[in-house]
Every structure is written in structure tokens, then in C-alpha cells.
Amino acid sequence: MKKLIALAVASSVSAVAMADLSITGSLKTNYTHKDYEHATSNDSDSFSTEGDLKITGKSGDTTVVMNFGNIDAASGNGSSPVAEDVYLTTKIGDINVKMGDYDNGNNPYRASTRAQRASLSTSLGGFDIAYTNGNGTANGGSDYQDDEVSIGTTLGGVKAKYVAKDSADAFSVSTEVAGVNVSYTSDNPDAAQTDRTVLEVSTEVQGVGIKYGQIDADLSATISGDSWMGDYEASAVEFTPLAGQDVTAVELSTNVAGNKVAFRNINVDGYATAGYDWSMNKVIVTRPLASGATLEITYKDIQDDGSVYTDVEILDIELAVSF
Image (tube, rainbow, N blue to C red; front, top):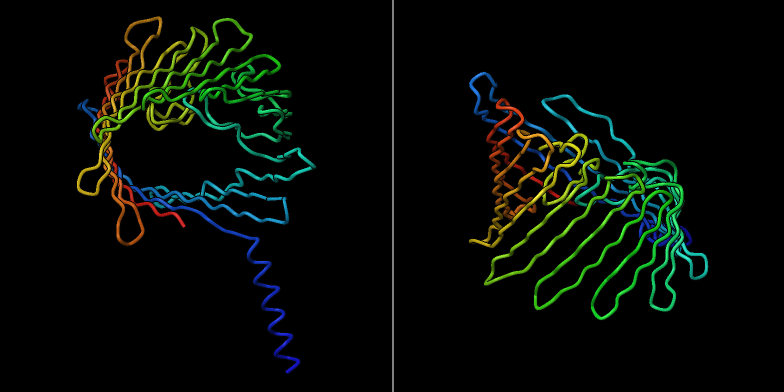
């Protein structure tokens, strides 16, 4: 009997311990066909696989997060997992604390950048206040740096946030008016001609989702984000804008026979010299499968004025699952 009681207690303790630990992740595998318009550019077929794993552990008000990425393979050549985000969140009284190695948050005009940093935040009189101190700078000091103070609030249905940094500041505002969502962000480094702004408008009309986006960059500013308006990061899958180039994007989406269908038209232009514009028409069809996976078929037609060798039509078939 004593052994049975001891076993029951041990099982109970083990179950409680496991309840504070969760493992989630995702995996996607893709087949991609590229059909280049220029006769001397070789068409290609490729397979790739990409996996991510997230481990979350909790102890009271403290949470530890470890994200592992780069669990990838392309044409049989695998890559070793990389610890991307490793941080903890906790509370000291009314102060929220976040410390570790984590990204600064991706958005349409800038890529996510990971760095060791610490953040303290709280709410006071309807205002959200935060202070962040981190290692390093990027994009002329506009993306993350040693000292950053932010204050945000919501007044009359309008969300507003101001961020002051060592060598830059940023302002964002968003609201919803008569079913139309509007947001505007302005990133303003101290260096001349390096401002970037983002305007996004979205609504739905008779079952059709409509989005409009515009990213403007000054003559010495470069767009490097990854969003529905395009992937422009340093290792961009689609395109790497030049300094001063702007982005304009439109999306229409709806549901047809259980499939989500989206059409996007994206244009990159505004470079001081002619012949460097880029455009893409993109169709995305997504369907959840009974197996728990998701099937996504994407067609891209890319026209690059900078080179006749990069005009291409791309068909991508993806199977993805999250767990």
C-alpha cells in the first residue's frame, strides 16, 4: 500500500511539473518551380523544409522562452538548429521585466534584429510606459539601441505611441472609423534623409477584404521589413530595395469553397535613377486539410526593371503544420 501511495504522489508531482512546461512548433515543406523569362536563365525545381521549435517554462509569474529556428533543409543539405530567442519575463511589484536575447519586432519598414536587452514596463494612469536598454545599433540607430523610452495610450478609440531613442524617435497611431482600419507609423532617425513612414488601410466590403499599404523611404533610407507588402530583408526571398525606394501594395482577399484566396499587387519604385523599379503580382490560395495540415499554393509574377535575367514566374506548393 505504501508503495502505491508513493507512486501516486510521485505521479501527481510529475504531472504538476509538466503542466508548467510546453513545447510547440511548426514545420513546412515546399516545392518551388521557377520559370525565368530570359532564354539564358535556367529554370529550376527545388524542395525545401523549414522547422521551428518553441519551449516555454513557467514558475509563478516568471516565464522562460527558448525559440529554436534554422531547423531547415534544402535539396538534402540540412542546417543545425539555432537558438533565436532566449529570454525571461517576470514581475517586480507592478513592474514587468523582460530580459534576454530577443528581436525588436518585425514590421513593414525594418527587419527584426535580435540582441541582448532588458525592458521594464508598467501602466500608470491609462498610459503604458516602457524603458529598454540593449546592445548595439542598426540602420543608423533607428532599429534598436542602448536607451529607448516609450509611452502609449488609447484616447477616444485612437491608439497612439511615441518612442524616444538615442539617435532617433518614432511615432505610431491607429484607429477604426466606420469599419475602416487605419494605421500610420513614422520612424525618424537624427541622420538627414533617413526617415521612413508606413500607411496601412484595411476594410471589408461584401465579403471581400481590402488592404492598401504604402511605405515611403527618404533618399538615404532603406526599407528592410517583411510583411504582406513584401519580403525585403537582407536575405530577401523576393527583392532587396535600394536606398530611397518606396513600396505600394494592394490586396484583395475572400473565401471560395473553403479556400482563402488573396491577390496582391506590389510595386517598388522611387529610386533616383530610372530602370530600377520592381513589381509583383501574387496569388495565394490557402486551404486547411482534414489531416490537420494546411495546403498553400502561391503564384508570383515578378518583373524587375534592373535586370531582364530576374523576370520570373514562380509556383510554390507548401504543406505546413503547427503543433
